[in-house]
Structures are given as C-alpha cells and as structure tokens.
Image (cartoon, rainbow, N blue to C red):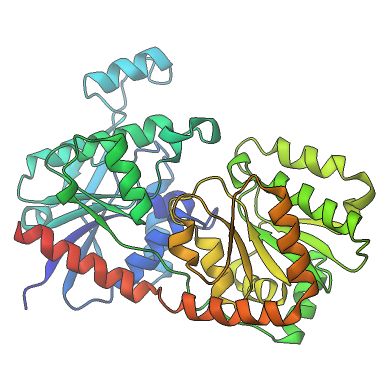
Amino acid sequence: MQKIKVIFDLEVIGNSYKNNQTGVYRVAYEIFKRFALRADLKVLYSNFNFNKDKHTNSKIDRFICENHVVIKPATSFKRIRFIPFRKEKFFRKLYNKFGLFDYRISYSKEVDTANIYHSLFYPIHESLAKFPDIKKIVTIHDLIPVLLPEYNSNTELLENTITSIGKNNFAICVSENTKMDLLKYAPQIDPNKVFVSLLAASPEFFYQCKNETKFSEVQGKYNIPEKYFLSLSTLEPRKNIDHVIRSFVRLISDKKIHDLSLVLVGGKGWDFDKIFNEFGHAKDFQDRIIITGRIPDEDLASIYSHANSFYYMSFYEGFGLPPLEAMQCGTPSVVSDTSSLPEVVGEAGILLDPKDQESLVKSMWKLYNDKFYRNELSEKSLMQAKKFSWEKTVQQHIDIYNKILSL
C-alpha cells in the first residue's frame, strides 16, 4: 500500500500551544497526533506565518519536541530585513497587493513528491500554486465571521480562506450545516469539492467521572457548589450567556430555589462586557453565579459529570464541541436548535429557540425537579456521544484524501 504524503499546516497549533488550547487548536491537535501514528500516511509540516508571529516557529518546534513526534518541515521562512514602513496599515496593504511579505517562504525537496496539503484554519498560501500536483485542502469550521460579523473580528481572514479555495482546491467542513452555509455564501465553489467530517470529544478528557475525591478537589479550586447548572464556552456575545443568566435568575426567584447555582466556565472572549453587565444586574443572586474563568482540561470531566444539567444557548456554531463533551460525560443538555447543534445533539438533549426564555425556564425547572427525567437524558446523551470519535474523524479524512487523489 502506497503512503499518502501529507503536508499538515501546524501554524494554528503553534499559535495556541500552551496558551489557548481550545476550539480549532483542539481539532488540529487531535487530528495531527493520530495522523503521526498512521502507517498509511507520511506527514510533513508547514507554517506560512499568516499570523505574523515571530514566536510561532519556536512554539511549533516545542510542540513537536514535547509530543515526541518525528516529522520533517516542508517549509521554512526568513524575515526580509529592509521593508520600509512595514507596520503602517497603508503600506502593509500595498505590500500584500504586490505579494511582498515580511517573510520569504522556501520549500524542502520533500514537497516535490507530496500528494496533499491541508490547512486546518488559514488560507491556502498562494505560493503553493507552483506545485500543481499537490491537492490543496482547507478546513472550514464555521461561517460566523462573514454571516455574523457583529460577533467576530476575523471577517477578512475567513474571506481570504474561502477565496483561496477557488475553483481548483478543496474544503472539508465540520458539519453539514457549515457545508450548506459555505456553498450558499460562495456559490462559485464546486459542491463536489466540499466534504464533511464531523468532530469528536477527546476521550481522555471527557468521560463520566463520579470520583468524589476528585470532585472535592475541583470544588475547592474553583468554588464549585454541590448543586449547579453548568455552561461552558468562551465568554462572548454569540454564546448568548446573558440569556442563560437571566433565565436562571428568573427560575430561582420565581420558584424560591435556595440550593442551586449557575457555574459559567470559560475565558473572556471578544466583547464580553454584555455578560458581565447581566451579572451585575443580578444583584440579589450574584453569590449564586460562579464565573470560574478557563479551567484546565484535566478538571473538566469532573465538573461536567457533577452538574445537574448543561446549557448551551449559542446563536450559531460550526459544530459545537461543548455539548458533545457534556453528553460524553453523561450530563443532560439543553442546547440551541440553531445551525449545526441539532446534528451534534440529535434526540439526546433538549433543543430550544435561543431567544425563548419561557421554554428555557421550563426546561431548567424540569431538570432541577425531575431526577428520572435527568437520568433518561443522561443515558441518551451517552449513547449519542458514542456516534462520534476522533478515530472516525481521522478515517473520514483519509477517505476524503483518497477520493480527492482519484479525481
């Protein structure tokens, strides 16, 4: 069996390594580490430094070393020393227009025999056009920056990524909904060159964890109460966390509940003030709303598993990993009925309009008050989560590579 020679772009891993290892980093990491072990692949790595971070290369080197991966680089770059006014916005745009960049890219000889180039986030670099025999693929995680620019600041980057697909290159989307959004937004892209591979939740971090000693340790570290609703996401407007806070406050106020809290896990994201303003309005109940900040992966299974239920009222998701993580921990979940989330949750959770407070409060009350209902949803969640795995995702990628190479 002939090996597929893949150039896997590691810039997104380098950008986030030891810093913000969530979202796209997680996807790239889980796929890459399994690629590195495949007997049917030969993997090289690239970094085109779209992020213009002089530390990315050294962080990639550190990642490779600390994960004991034997892998060769496909690219290298040197900074061009004499570019006047390189930091000025006007000149930067002018230089980009004429293809003059801060760094000069060079390729190793290994690239001449490569079959596939795959970027997990950034655009397909235009210099790759000189290798017409290499099939070029980019992963599209969501269309948020172009469909909902008010919730994101990466609009230009995604536009460039979509443009880089063009007529000759390929895309892998993380959900059927994302594929549909991509083709609707960019009808010039050939639908036969767009594929879908669903994501997964890491089994070493997300599992049913009923260890009371571990939970006691976690409670002490993050001020977690005995009985709580849980929400986990980056704190930003698109996640609709202020709606969850308002609904929770209404529930415990109307029903006179004294033994329940709301735990919000996640780092501060883009334009998070709205969430903290809502927290400020809940003056009589602020001690019942715990904002932990970002929590390391190794503590999340315990927090998910001990929650009464999980809430994810996001307005839009390309896939939606947190609900899958919650389900894999056996936690009953209430999730928006928008975008890709029904694909992930199926019939294992409660799907609601993300603006419907009445339905959310009713669901919160039922999950608080009905142990049998919680147990039923917990069992359904565990069954639904078994439909997803990184091994399945990786095999889907290999199948897609083979299909593309046969075209």
